[in-house]
Length: 319
Image (tube, rainbow, N blue to C red; front, side, top):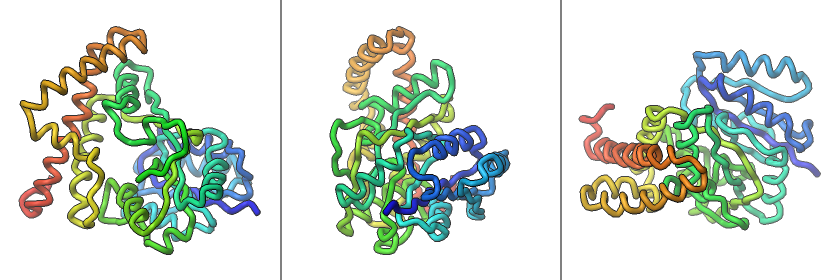
């Protein structure tokens, strides 16, 4: 029998992306009568809710529910969605992405074939705008020098991993190890999947499951996002005793070991810059990519330093 799928989309102020995300979901080749979509909105102040309601009116036979998340943050939204979900399988989807037509059907297929507890695919990072900076940011997040996650680096064969983008879970996973940690404003997926693995769960990355992700399109937005990610690479240690993998701490190590680390960093960066400029046939990227990589690495590393300060001196560090 074809299992019922519950798709959970936590969001807040996503009017630019929610419509495209929902359009890619309704175009899935999975049976529509076996899908429900739970958009869990964190008190959006833009037109996100209006766009979801409009989508519901335009597609009256498609099961979409708009649910309130008064706490606003992602882990609360995920947990509200899981509690409301009726499906045997629960898929977490992101508003900043759209998905190949067979995304859901392949997630379900691999979940069964490999007897996995969580399945995900690769993400192909695309520019959010038609600008050179947006293109450079997308390249940064797709390149080994700017990205460390398996799901960004496109393996050629299915492999067992520590975490995946989004995630397609058996429902019993949440009954076994609990819900997402609501103390974690960021990194809740990483922590949950590490907890899942420690409980004996198996997480599969399948390269033919494909989503397209649209990151920040400005250097300021990109820096802010990486800075916050850096903070939340450290701060989970305040609430859980499971450290992340070494790759999450490399920007911190880089920043803390300046000025020694700047020279190998510079030489490695120079090598990759030539590669990128030649591959993209755009000499401008040779001069722009150093800035984008620096925003990525310094933003994350400086954020991690603040995370350490918050961990050690919680009463003195409030921002």
